Image (cartoon, rainbow, N blue to C red):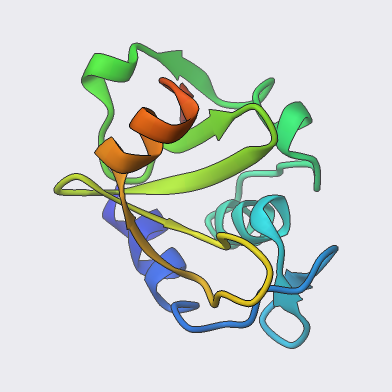
Length: 115
């Protein structure tokens, strides 16, 4: 879903702020995904665990651009081409990271599709 990826890309470089959920304040991981999908018309709660209950589950082997990735305690947007966009952690802006490195570190995510 290129629309969701484009929305996520629009916030690259936004500051990480715990509890943040808008471009004006900055974002934490679930605030970022809630804002991104909200711009595309899909409600998500501001909680990484609760976000796993939204959208349609997709096998991780079929992950596609625009899918929501849910790990224990972290969420991200799959951007395609082996990349994710996320509000990574304190001190780091919204950025790209490698999907395979995230899987190596945190395991295979739940994948949820919207649209």
